[in-house]
Image (cartoon, rainbow, N blue to C red; front, side, top):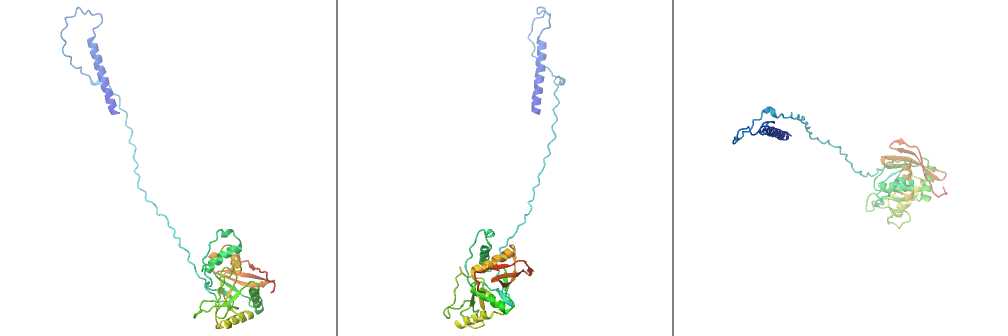
Length: 301
């Protein structure tokens, strides 16, 4: 803009010079040119001096104040919190000794790969129980203790109902020697181990503890004699999958989904009107209201 103003000032100065030359060359009005002396060669015109006041330059506009430049300081990114997710480690349930009842045994009877079932939350209690049973067979689940009745007559009735109505099988499993970890049951050839069908029987085997019913004790002795085993060989109670699935699904329902967070679950069996009831449920020492019914079509007890 300053350059443009200077060019404008030069134009004004040239205009004033041209006007002065024109005034000098034009004769005044009423003057006779004949009375003028002969013209002589005009001297070489000298450039007129232009006074500084002949051209008034406009006041240059004020320059706007410089816009302050804001220096942006580099921002230091804040450190984000990193959440470390640790994978769950399966824990094998530990056997619990009880006065009269059964405790969880290490479920190594029937190992099989767990099959994921989608939408388990919206499925029935029995289907949910099958999912929990597969997890328990692979060592993921709480330790479960199920107490039997204290009275001998009630234990006898409960044992017969489990054996004759719900399909429970008794087995002897040596913990040492060449037959360690193998199962031996009644009605099999002597010395031949039993290989249960994993689609029919549960791998959630329980070890009896405390006093046994007379009929159960006699059945275990018969198995020991048949397979030439010691009468002190550890015993196991093996149930059909449908029974254990109903039991675990019922526990999950009574605990309102808190089954997976439980460390130890205790309950007791009761036989009422031909139906086995699981009641007196405790989770990590805390009583939980509710009961589970293991219905069966058997009416002989």
